[in-house]
Length: 329
Image 1 (spheres, rainbow, N blue to C red):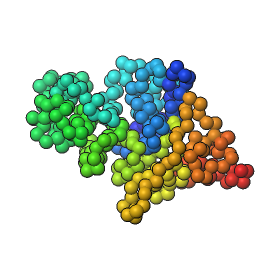
Image 2: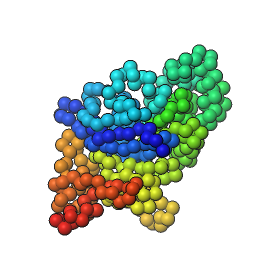
Image 3: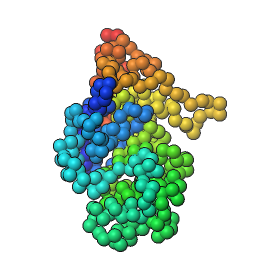
Image 4: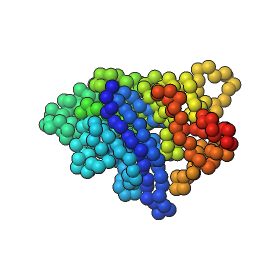
């Protein structure tokens, strides 16, 4: 399958009053057409910054691209001007944001908000765009779309607002949809409905998806590949089967142990990851997970490990998997 998106050695920093924050550090990955890639990790690990950098939504300053490339259909988005990006956003790449209540305009009817994107990217009149908006709301399973287009966001439930956000993102049948925590603050049943909706849209419209989440359980049945991020770096990547059946990095294992499982005993408690991520004002020179790892060695404190390849699809960044590190510890 051909590559739709290729991120190479991406580095994103923020210039603050206290100094430079290295939010994304040497991140590389590829995404094929019609594939789903999940980027998982704790809050603050660089997931959203990575996703926002693809569509160039980070305010510059304070953010700046320190290095790397973002190749979409062979073109480097890092070098694109804002005017050029406006032709790509919504048309070829769309994004569903984390909180639909703050992303939707509370003073505008839902139908008008959907119609705006249609008129901008498809050169339709308002009446034509309104008709198309009804069709899209029906496509994302919003009941009574003819009535709903004349309602305001506060008249929708959380799950229905998220469906509206997905509808806005899908108006132009983009080749890539970036979904940033699309199930946050939704109950389990609604989460499943939203994920099922995105999966159906992907299959019907042949759209590739980047799914940003801190919950590995959400992506189990949807992701083709999974990237695990920690402290602005990728610490493990592989297929969904690789990550769930054979997690290698201690951080990935702890993330999986913190998710409820069907086989849990009645009195068994969920595991938590003790400690906090490192301060990225001064990133550690060794492994970023050193202070929270149960298997840390002396070399982990001093040297950041390179990727170890476990199979054609599975890699992790951990000294435990490198024989020479164990011998020299």
